[in-house]
Image 1 (cartoon, rainbow, N blue to C red):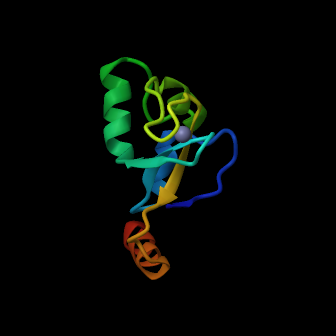
Image 2 (cartoon, rainbow, N blue to C red):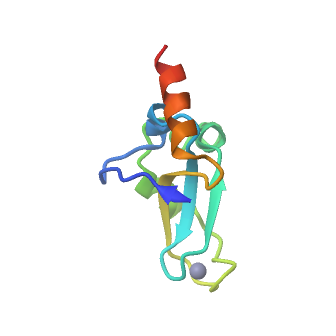
Length: 100
Ligand SMILES: [Zn+2]
């Protein structure tokens, strides 16, 4: 997945500005990564009364409490990222559609 460069204050809700993006949880130790639907993460945070749209991505990363399937350590990063199957042209098309 191609990580979308965002500042340290980036929150899950920022996904709305990047139509088609995923929330990527990446192991800081070995690079193992898994993509999630940002909407589902927000839904889950709300269900747990643990946050929502404004929850920083860093907080989401800290909430991941399972060890990495690749290296069995526990140090996660959360980013918004483009899935590999989404081309740049497609991303632009989705963004344009979201604006209209
Ligand atoms: Zn790992």
